[in-house]
Length: 332
Image 1 (tube, rainbow, N blue to C red):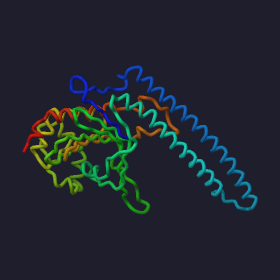
Image 2 (image 1 turned 30 degrees about the vertical axis):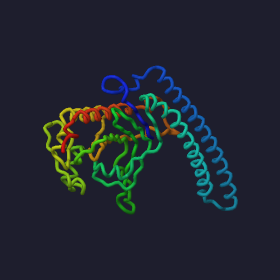
Image 3 (image 1 turned 60 degrees about the horizontal axis):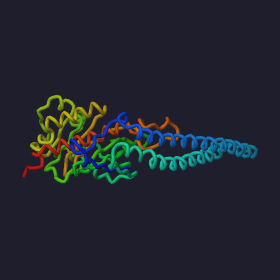
């Protein structure tokens, strides 16, 4: 999904603020609810269709098995497998059509509700290499998927929010398993000026465990631990950097306070990376916000929006804090 947001117009800090769903006006809420009601009705209709197909396949499968049984072919796997394949195939086909309607109707209205100027794309331009270059995770991902990208602009600085999942395969034989390295939202801020070095902010507990037991990753070993003047921040996060002075210019008392507030507010372990001309923020989540479930609870504006508005606000606050810190951008 890709959404473009323009916050350059407006009063105060240079753009309209983005609030929680409770702060939306009645007209917008009614449009969101109408879209959710339509999708819920479509879900119910598809469920009934899948149920009817399942019943039909069960009857057909039983008839086929009875016929085979009379011919002394008592293995039920063929009729049962055929019936299940038909049911699963039909449900998957219907679900794809439902997902397209959901994204074109409900997601589009959600994006509009978050603010004027937003644009949405079900695909993302964020690549596996972009993920690796952030250097925020110890394990190297093998399989990568990104979608549902929201893009915005405030004070001529572009930003995007997307859903991503990074996994790898570990073990062998019966112990072979897929490990999820990251699943959730990635926020990217793109400035028109470059950072001189690379600074990453990761959970302090992870740094102690992985660094102490297994050693740092190859890319992390090229960075030094940054010593800051906020004891409370360093209890929660570890900071690695290639440029100590720049790291301190980036992580000002105000920035550290903002990051700590965000972690408490979102209730998850966030990570940040500052390099080239971009800032990256990862927000882990378990669900797929922009995917509709065929068998699950009803779709509601609260469920779809969730903490997305809060993440967008955080992106804009990070942007403002970095723009004001002129020392980062004026170094020779």
